[in-house]
Image (cartoon, rainbow, N blue to C red; front, top):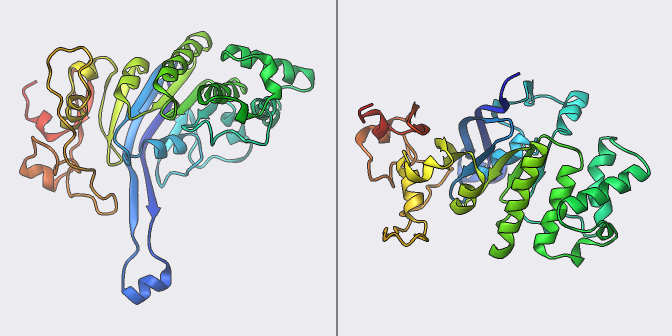
Length: 329
């Protein structure tokens, strides 16, 4: 059996952002497409946490939604435990779907305000026909206890809870179908800093107890450092570097990764100067030629404007940068 639970190969997603047909005819404009994700490939091993980081608009959440089937892929394939997910439907997809779940970014929007907490958590159990009758209520109570709430909370509505408690409810719902793989789309970004640590520690404890595998989406490098075994850095829909979770912070290979790390406040008070992130992400409808990062890159060379770099192996993983190709091995 392969160690890789999830494999993503050449994943691409386009969005049609054209004006209505009549406007295009009158204004003599062509269709316009936004490339949200471009040729992304990675794999996630069983029991590990693989994190995707990048600025807003880099394609993190789009990848998360494609992995769980909320968005279709324009190109590329997604394999889950050896089963092809792209293009799969019906009973085969339903059998796979029970094995992975998603925790959404906003706990205020992801829970139905008209449903009691017990019904929210029990929905996946009923959907996949896992239990019936009193077994469902017992399972809901167990899950609430597991995430640090009380079984009595099953009778309450979401508005009776704080943001951190709502995210615990969302985690309990994700666990109710007994999944092996959970996609976490910025699960703590909508929470207070004091609550974030509690939720992250809970997720790590659940991973250790249940052998869960996480795809963790975040823009917060401090959160990623705490959670991830391996980290993928996204820029304008492309994966520019993948590295070991600890070594990425001490040995960044790609110039964009270095730029992100230089902007992080120096909490260790080592005297390192903080540098703000320079420039802005280009328009994804009309991206730069060659390497999309070259307008902001301090190492840019003429080749960067003409060609898109291919990934090369590094000491910490791999990265896509022409500057790495010219360095001695």
